[in-house]
Image (cartoon, rainbow over all chains, first blue to last red; front, side, top):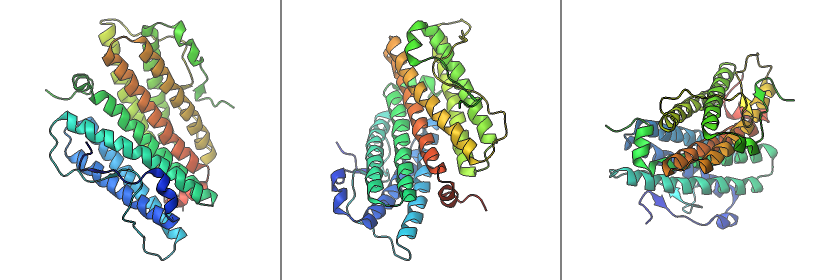
Length: 174
Length: 174
């Protein structure tokens, strides 16, 4: 089941249907969505080590948004950012409900992993489309950062599947 | 040239020459070495965003050390940890010299990437050797975390190669 915090989005092949300007708008929107998702998720998590990690992810996405805005401004000076209604890959949305235990966290982290994985590919696709070496470099930076997030989340996910061990290892719970 | 902060170590195939107890000792020693490396590197870096990221890595390695000590204590109760003289893969050591500009940072990050990459494989090898599911899970956790570190470092490395862009994007320098 797809949870309400995740919208499936278009497949990565659809990148070619959009202009670079639209793709950058999508990327900015997606970084904002990811930040809000992580912020709202962190608020609902009581496991201190995991909360900190999720807050760290939120801060990272916020920095990515700033980088993308700079790049947009340098490529399309003076232009308002175009935010297409569509988006490539899963789009994360704020978590508005109370979480009912560790299984809800596990599910949300699994979806976040998927979103991060597609985001990494998305930036690789934009890398092919931009022509200057510095812009390609920035896209590789963002792609690698999202890959880093994917593995950070996968590590937590893997350990959360065994709650007894997680709580014992991370000093949480009674 | 291999910098003084890095000792090349044995190839990953040599894992089979050691007992599980020795490998865990190596892993603990290696996490301590990585923490000290990142701490000393962070002290010598003036770029605030990069310094914070490196400090974050130091904190992570410190948590890994604690997890490994717990696992060791549960597997070999009451035993002193055995630290073999050898180590698999590059072992990071504290940075004791003054860094002479961005190229020194770039070189050290490249070596840290290599150490993180091998560490990820090292934990995968230990995963094959431990028999209980919870210990395998912990090894997958550590392996994924190190992969996350690898990509985080690779992102910074890639951007640092273009210093002009890095300083412009990250708001550093005059």
